Amino acid sequence: MMSALHRFVDRVPPVYSLLIWIALWEIVGQLDLAFILPPFSAVIEQLYHLVQRPIFLSAAATTLKAFVIGMAIAISGGITIGFVMGRFPTANGVLGMWVNIFASAPLSSLVPVLMLLFGLGQTTIIVTVVLFSIWIIALDTYAGVRHISPSLDEMGNSFGANRWQLLTKVLFWAALPEILAGVRMGMIRAVKGIVIGQLLVSVVAFGRLFRTFSDNFQFEQFWALTLILFVFALGFSSAVGWLEHKVEYYAGSRI
Image 1: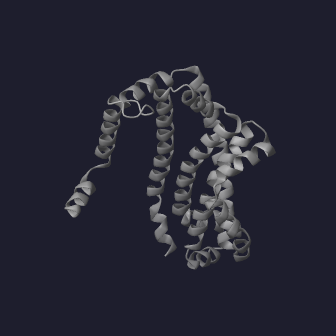
Image 2: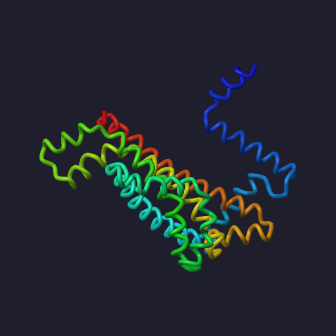
């Protein structure tokens, strides 16, 4: 019976699974089984009104700016660290331990320290985004570089490529599938980092809205804002995942 159930679950399309969870959410909300979980229909109604409010638009602009700046720093820094670790064993010996520590550490505990170092402003939130995302990008880049076949180095040298040309025109493209996988995971972690930063550091933008909605028991608005962040993270992740799928053929060049 369990195997039949597993086969049924495997055949259910993801969109149907989502609809099932939405239906369960609506039922629980309508039955008023948990005061913190209003009906899904009420959440969608509040979402429609929320996205038109000036306070939301201002918070979204502030959050998006911090996200873009933080991710730009994390991507460039993570790829650089990953390449250095992958190409130079000495650098891997020095940096590898610290990258793995920060990748697995509870970074939320460092946010108060960042507040003391950078103050109660946008800089702290940007640094939080970087800390949450840069390490996974570095690790995936390192994995991609380590899987590059030595024959690609020989091919580049045989064609007279200098070190910069070899790095940018051969090795980078060969490691691109893993780099994009790291960027995709880094973006998901960055969304979590930016919300934590806004809540714990300076209670601004979305963090202030979350605090206001929860303190006033406005759970329809609270969940509406949560859905927006989920869609935001899923949208960026899906876009990078689509790009990752498009460049998968580069992986074959490393064999």
